[in-house]
Length: 261
Image (cartoon, rainbow, N blue to C red):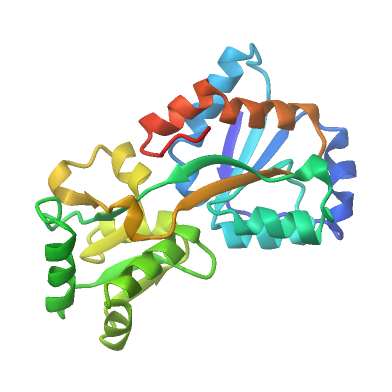
C-alpha cells in the first residue's frame, strides 16, 4: 500500500519515535514534494526486486521545512528524504546529537527548470530569457517558498544573480508557492506565466521542449538532496540502501535528476 498525504502527525517527543514504530511493519517516509513523481515508482521497484509485495509503505509529501517541523514535533516517520542537505544535518545535530547511526546521506541531485504552459521558453538561452523576464512587467512568475523549499531557495538565488529578484518583488510579479508541487501547479494551470520548477516535474508530465528551459547547473546552488534515518528499523535502512544502489539511481536519472555516487 502506498499512501501519499500531507496530514501532520505527531507525538510528544522526538525520542518516542522509535517506540512508536517498533511494533509496526509499516515503513513511513517523509519526502520532499519534488519526489512525488519518482518515489512511487522507486517504491514499487523496491518491493518487486526485494520480493516484498506485502510491504506497506506510507509516504507524506510536503515541503522539506514543513516535514522537518513535523519530525521535530515527534511525527512517527522512519525516513526523511529532504530536498536539501541542511534539514537532515540539523536533525543530526539537534535530535540525534551526532549519533553515527543517523548520519545523513546524499541520494540524488535535483535540477531546476523554468516552465510555462502558455509561453515558448525553450527557444531562449539564459541571457535572452533573463531579458524576457526583466522586460515583461505584466508577466507573473512563481517560485516555491525559499524559507521552506530548497528548490525555491535555489530559484531565489538564481533570480538574485540575474538582478531580477528585487525588481520582481517591487512589481508584485513574484508569486510564492508553499512548495515545489504547488509552484508547478500554478505554472501548469496557467495561473502564472512562468514557474521555477523541478526538472523532474516537466519530465514526468512529458512537457514538450519549447515549454521549458533547463537552467545550467552552474547558475544556481547545487540542489544536493540528503536523507536521514529517523528510526533504527531494518527495513528503513534497507530501503535507503536501495535508493543509493545503481538500480535506485537509474530511476532518478530517468526522472530528470543527476545520479550520485
